[in-house]
Image 1 (cartoon, rainbow, N blue to C red):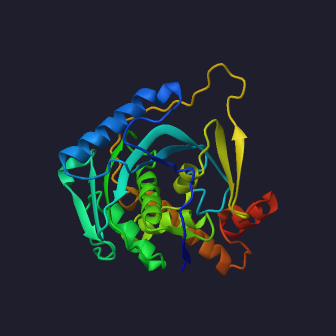
Image 2: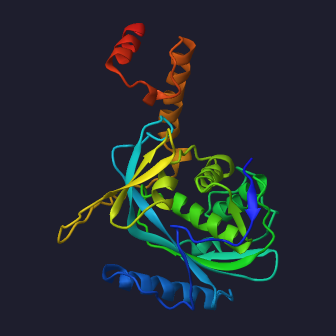
Image 3: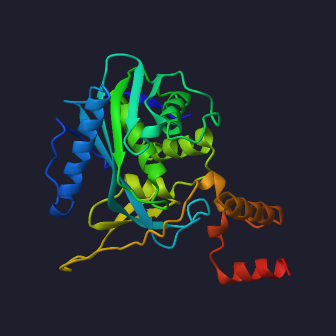
Length: 306
């Protein structure tokens, strides 16, 4: 398991700012959206008796990735960017062991309320967004990060459709918030990525890799994020430097995405893992499909399966 330290929380790229729910200084293109989000959070909290004023707001991004789908668990290097579509979470410790959190986007699910350390077992919660706060508390405690402090929170997001990793964004946001509220910090920063993946893999049952979490957590404005899985090294590539205007555009097709656990993703992943297992059984010294790095090895594998 992971070792958690009970220390004073530090800032991260998934940022939290102290606030009275007035918009912070942000770049011009996002000022209006940021102000709208803060107004929605304030209204949602006031209308539902949740005390977050004088607390903090944590904002987490979404992501675009380039040519690396199914790459993370296959061992390839990854590249992507954070986007200007976010999830905002306003929160404040409430002095009890109760977590009370409400979503503007999923109002029909009502108030999610639970005692820290007393969550339903994995894979038992119906298909509602409450799986994410339950799962974050469950995984933190499973990995030795004992949660003791409850908080009130409201959440709102403007990440459209599917395919931009709302689930990873929400999971990172909730995990970091719970850790901050409880004065917890992991020893190695990359363990945040592993915790977020565990929430989806173990608690929710989604067979995701680490691509989404990496690209959101390590996102840096104006840069693409490169990840080397062999060394777990993050590096940044400037995008649009010197350009009067540089944008990456995406089209929302309106496709309904029910989640990786209900999609063909799990089938493709199982096929890739089955092939690696088969190659290992034939004596090929590989750890994943990205280990096949030369044309000679590729040709030998093809000949072996003819």
